[in-house]
Image (cartoon, rainbow, N blue to C red; front, side, top):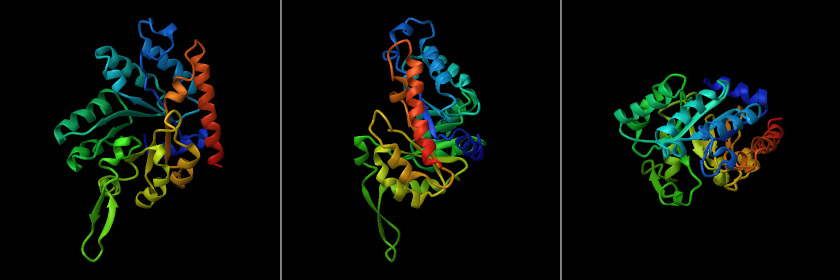
Amino acid sequence: MTRQSLIEQIKNKRSYLCVGLDTDITKIPKHLQDHKDAIFEFNKQIIDATKDLCVSYKINTAFYEAMGLKGWEAMERTVNYIPNEHFKIADAKRGDIGNTSSQYAKAFFETMNFDAITVAPYMGEDSIRPFLEFKGKWTIVLGLTSNKGAADFEMLKIQNGNEEHLRSDFLYESVIRKVASWGTPDNLMFVLGATQATELENIRNIIPDSFLLVPGVGAQGGSLSDVTKYGKNDDCGLLVNASRAIIYASEKENFAEEARAIALQYQTEMAGYLL
C-alpha cells in the first residue's frame, strides 16, 4: 500500500483507527470456543463489524504462533479475509542478522501478504535493510514503547555530536534519528506508545513526516486526545491501535455488535480531530 492510498483512506473514512486482532482463544466468547476454526470465525465477525470504521488491522503474531500450525493457518486466513483497502500489519517485532531478516520479510510480505511488519532496531541497519527493500511494503520500527522496561534502555541518556556541538539525547531519540535516515516516510513508520504521548511533540521534531503506529489507547490507558494533539501532522500521520477495548467489548453472542459500538466511539472522536 502506498502512503497516498493510506492518506486517502483516512480522509474518506474520517478515521485513523487500527483494530488490533490480538486474539486469545481463552478470551473469545464461549459459544465460539468449540468452533472448528474458532480464531478465524471470531476475527471474521470482528472484521465484518468494524471494517468501515477503521483503516488498518494489526495482527499480533504471538497469539497465533503460540497455537502452532493451527494458529498460523488461522492467521493466514485472517489476513486474506481483511479487505485490500485496509493496511495490514504483522506485529511480529522481528530483528536478526540480515539473511535471517530476509527470510522474515519473505514470510510476511510474500507468503502472508501483509503490508507492514514491526521490527526491533537494536541490531542495526543490516538487520532492518532487508525489510526496506520490498517495494510497496512498510517497516514499522520500535521507537518509544509504553512498557515499564522502556526505562531500562530507551530512556537512557547518551552523548551525541562532537566537542563543539555536543548534545545529550535519550537513546530512543538517537535510534529514531538514525533509523529515519535508512528509509523514507513512504516505507518507514515508528511505534510510539500512547502512554508516552507527551514525548510525541519532541519526536515530531525529529520525524515530522513519518507515520506513527500508536498502541496503548483503550485498555492500556492512553489518551486519544493527547496522542492526536502531540502526534498529528498535516497528513494525519497516525495509526492509533486499539485491541482489547474493541475485540473483547463483550463475552456474549453479540460481541461483534459491541465491538462495533466501541470502534464507532473511536471513529467519531477521530472524525472531530480531522476537521
